Length: 165
Image (cartoon, rainbow, N blue to C red; front, side, top):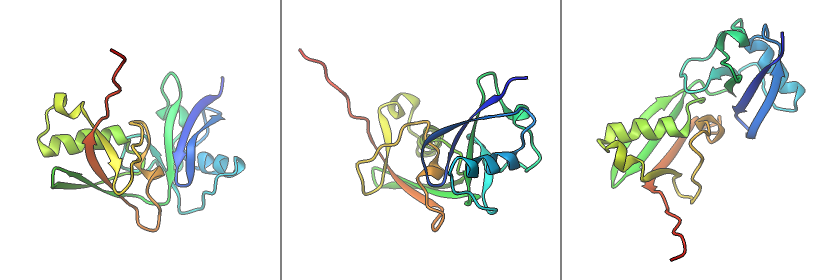
């Protein structure tokens, strides 16, 4: 059987790392594979499936969670990341697993703020106090340091690129 593509994000991992693991590899093996690729992962780190709030148990096999094109995982010492989103003076706070994507956080915040899907399509999350607007597929754990296990965003208009007239 061929190897499975594992697309990994995590604490201290700037870009998505692609690992190729045997189908019977476990979540524990993922942590070991991180070390062999120069990623600093200690025994406190847990493995999360993308957009899931609970960590995988060490014995879960990669093939049991992978789809046709592989699996997206997140490795982090934080079991939860506190997220704060500010929009027009209103604040929503929620706690997610570190493998939750920016897109999922935005959808959750928009729903809680009562913003329609159409209006939400015109908004983007921006890290509070910066101009950094992470892509929708970035895991929030890549942005949250383990010292705080928290991140704050502003929900701002998505800049439109205007073509030449």
